[in-house]
Length: 278
Image (cartoon, rainbow, N blue to C red):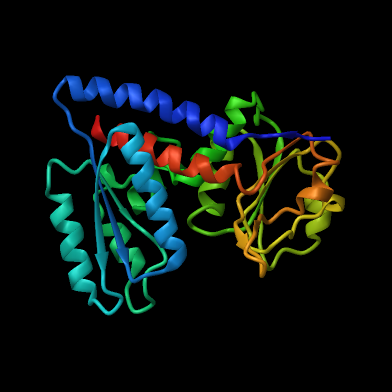
């Protein structure tokens, strides 16, 4: 029976330490301020930005929210980003994805200054991550690494498999594990013999966006299983990309959904904002 990795507990410790840090910065006269931009009214995005706002409030970071109409032109979005780039009192900027199809999200990410890019999506930060240099790392992979560290799971020399190759999770996750000397395989929709690959893995990160995709029979005995997925079922409940019930009997460690990686993502965002302020 696997040890269940409590993301809520670890995230709470991280936030607590950050709160102390922010309080000290305030005493030195430094007020941290974070800006979130959302385009349109995606219901999942609304929940995410509400969670970010609550975390800021708890830690003592000033929070600004910009909700733009879904019909805006690209220029309007870029003008707002530039305005926030040029404000010295704003330390971090986040563009909530997804954004409407007619807008170019890559151009928007490129426009956010690398030193304010607390989501880690500006190509400068992506490049620095690949080179193993100090940079802002995408919050979900960073949260996964923090969880592994908290549970004393050493990734060096281990066979790690990442399922999913998104720019938001899969690719930066691959790089984070590689930078810690894991041997990493990335799998995706065109991968052949997925089962053969996952059964050899010491660590599996599932970020594929398909409910209960990774079953217990795809995991070797004693593997560490990290579930990044959030899928809403017809009855309104949520589940991950891992079939938790069958996987927990094979894994040595496993993250639940909810309460695993999710809280860590927000905690790492807060950590990145504090880093940006320095």
